[in-house]
Length: 203
Ligand SMILES: C[S@@+](CC[C@H](N)C(=O)[O-])C[C@H]1O[C@@H](n2cnc3c(N)ncnc32)[C@H](O)[C@@H]1O
Image (cartoon, rainbow, N blue to C red):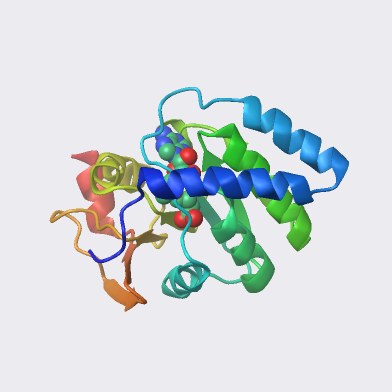
């Protein structure tokens, strides 16, 4: 695993960038951003915020074979870059879930700026309490422990053929990836939900 793990330094940098972003926004949007800045997540983050580099976002969408007709869920969506890119450049629809209201406010601004707000939905929520069963593609940039905690939920909820793509971290020995690609120091893993996973979820 060569990609850097989300860390506190990057989290601090991102807060600065979010503050700079608010200055650049038109008044109404800046007010929305500021009010979101006042809100704290309902529980401590399971994973700190570190955005996926755009080149890696595109690699994730390639490995997920994302195209028109897909419904992509990004669990822990940060500033919404994966969902917005899937909508704008691949014609998909998307849902982003993040426990941090500040990230959801940023994602909504990003969707508006990209002109895809009618094809995406960003919601404040805990990924462990989310129904993502309608997804055809799920993307993740979490941590090894959180991926493994989420694995039974992915197997239970997702339909046969759904693609799962993870930046930086795999799913442990019980679910080897079908594809692994490296790009500029980052690793991307891809899986497909098959009958074996549905059987394992039932046992
Ligand atoms: C490493 S960032 C990834 C952001 C985005 N997916 C990307 O790749 O650019 C992880 C995100 O997960 C969010 N997060 C952490 N714990 C969460 C939870 N329990 N439910 C939903 N989101 C969570 C954080 O707020 C953060 O935005």
